[in-house]
Image (cartoon, rainbow, N blue to C red):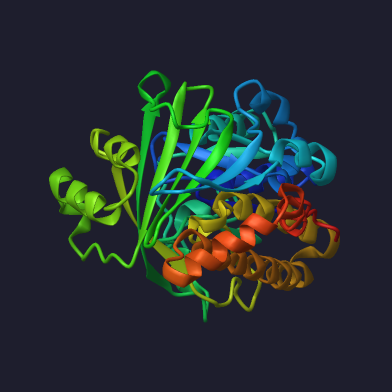
Amino acid sequence: MKSIAIVGAGIAGLTTSLCLARRGMASRIFEKATQLEEVGAGLQLSPNVTSILDELGILETLKQRWFEPEHVLLRAGDSLRQLASVPVRRFAAKEWGAPYAVLHRATLQQALLKAVINNPLCTLVLDQRIESPDAQILRDSLTGSRPDLLVAADGVWSKLRNFVAGAPDISFSGNVAWRMTLPWQDAPGFLDSQSVTAYTGAHAHLVVYPLAEARLFNIVAISAGMDPGESWAARSDATQRVMLERAFKGWHPGILSMLLDRPSPTFWPLFQAGIGRWHTDDSNLVLIGDAAHAMMPFSAQGAAMAIEDGMELAEQLHLHGKQAGLPRFAASRQARIAQVRNRGTLNRMVYHAKGPLRLGRDMVLALRSPDSLAKDLNWLYGYRFRG
C-alpha cells in the first residue's frame, strides 16, 4: 500500500504505526490534541502485550520504570481476608514467555511516542481533528488522492465509526469507576506493595497496585448498577463522593477511609461497544481499539486488546494485503475479543458475588491451588499471533 493514515495518537494509534513500520509500511498519525497528554494513571501490561512491546523494541526502556508484581491477589472487601492468589511473576517467566508488569499509563505512551518520533516510517501530525474519511488534510498534497487505508483509532466516541455500515453501537454499561492515586507514604498498612490486589464486594470491587516510577498506589473503584445520569460530568465532587460512599457501604473501615480521604477522585461512567462490523465494504477504513471494541475493565485487557490489534493488523496486511487482510483481521480479532469479554463477565461475577453465590465462590477458590488458577490464564497471557 502506498499510504496509510491513522486517526488517534493514543496507545492504539501509536502502537499500530510502529507495527506497520516493523513490516516496512509507512503511516501518518493524525491527532486532534495540540500535545499528547494521557489521561488515567495505572496500567497492567500482561505477557500477551509485553511480548509485542518487545518486538517493537521498547521493552527495555519500560523495564527501567515499571514494577513486576509477585501475585494477583483476591481479597474480601469487608474483612480483607485473602480468597485467592495467582503467581504472575513466576508464571510470566515460566509459562507465558514475557513479563507481567504495572506502570503509569503515561510511561507507556511516552515510550511509544519516542519510538514513533524516531522511526522514519512514522509521521505524527498534531492539532488535526478528523471526523470524516473525506477530510482534506488526509489527501496527498501533490496528487489529491485519499489514503489507501484509513485506520480509526479514535476511541470509544469515534466519529469515523459512523462511516462503517453496521458498526458497533456504544452504550452505558451500568458500571461507574472512580480512579485515584495514593502516595506510598500515605498508604494504609494493609495494602500489598508487591502485588496487584482486587478487593471484592456485593455490588462493587476495588483494584490496587503500586506504580514504582511515581511512588504511588493506583486505585480503581468500580460500582455496578449505578446510573450517573446525563449530567454526570457537571456533578460536584461532593455529590460524587456521596455516590462513592454509598457504593462501598459496609466495606472494611480502612478501605472506606482510604477512598473517601482522596481529594477529587476522577469519576468515569463506563461505556462499551456492542457487536458489529469493523471495516467498510471497500476495505478503505478499519476500526481498532476502543473504536471497535470498547470493553469493561474486569479483565484489565482494554489497552492490551488495542495493542494486539495493532500487531495483527500489520501482520495481516503484510501477509495478505488490504482486500483479504482486513476480513481476516476482523474475524480473528472479533473471536479473540469475545473470549476476553467472556472472561470479564466471569470476573465480574466473582468480584460482585453476594449471598449463596459468594459462599460458593469462596468454597471453589479455597479448593484451587495458585498454580491451577494461573494455568487458567494460559489462553490469555500466552497468546501470540500465528498468522
